[in-house]
Image (cartoon, rainbow, N blue to C red; front, side):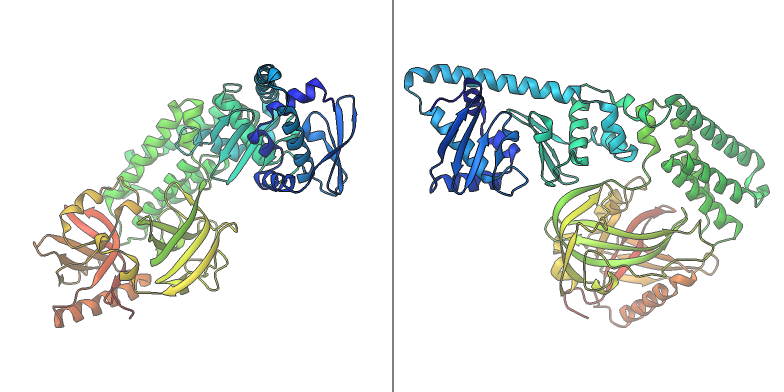
Length: 557
């Protein structure tokens, strides 16, 4: 049997990584197993092709290997063709020892040619075509991700492998590119292959990050539009400060809403959210809410001013990051073992309302949230707390899973620790248990001296979460001016944290529960309740905004 020289060189260079890229690891292992019981037989050798029988199938092996054929009904690279390639490779390797050195040289030279050919193909693929197919949102996320540790992992050998764990997907490129494989098993040039190829081009300097988004919009027009909006925002804030808070007209609310709408249509989500938070503070002022604080209004105004100023002076790449995204980018984190520790209803000053669910991960010992929030600034009817959410194929609502274990497979999490509601996640609801069985004693704070460092306002919400077991509590007189309930919590060294709740109609049940708890505590000083909440600072005091309180921490209530 005489094997053509070009086919011989290709067989010698076809290592395991190349064959896995040609099919997949499972098919390769099955082909190896079949060769232990099946002896292929050469039927014909003609030109640059060889025809063999492999079991009941007839295979014709040609170059590139991806164009080889088989009489079996498989539409993809089957085990018969892989078995034939492996068998031919073994025959070539069994040549006499005088040819081994030459074969090795031929193999190395051919492997170099494959690598060079593959690199040329990837570099020559039109970048603008890839960008248009991928879409502006995913391209923007790709650019941002390249500056983080979560960027794609690229390995180059006889194949080029790109691992994208946030999808999750792995793409293996081989020459020709149409024979490349993706773990999604798509036979077409799927979006994963497009993103992997664009990532490779960006990493190797084929295209610059500053030029990626120019395909979607004129950069000069986009930058000019951003400048105009930021200038209008700063002018409005200047006028408000000159006018003074006491003389500010009610129409300021409409002005803030209009500016937020302009930011939305101009794709400036971070500035839109900052303006909506400012709108919420203005609304608190005009409705004479007891929760209004002048300091917070000034903080919101300065926050908007600084962001608008930064957007005006930023480069194209920096402006993309400052502008933010309308939706969180979620990364795949595998399986999570969650415990639903608590939940609370929120009505955010940014115009969103709903329920936030707080989970404790029992193996990583960290917090995650799921936010079921809906915008209210487009709806006349208040949607606050109007719906229950069912996620992850659970048998009931999340509220019904309170204090239950949930095993979540295929979990996806944002940078801020928010869980995705994607249908790719699957949850298994386990038994209901007391929180003390899920949360280790080391996560329960009885010495308050370490909590001050975790209450800085610049820290994220999850970093400021705390579980406290105070030594005793002192109920304070109800503040009728500020309409605030206060409970002073003390540890053994008499260091204190103030648990405070501002009275609103929707907080009535929380206040009543805390009042009952304070009464029980006074009658029974040996009671050791546990409080779960968010730390913050106010008037030189360390405070806790309560999410849940437990009187039966170690046992079911």
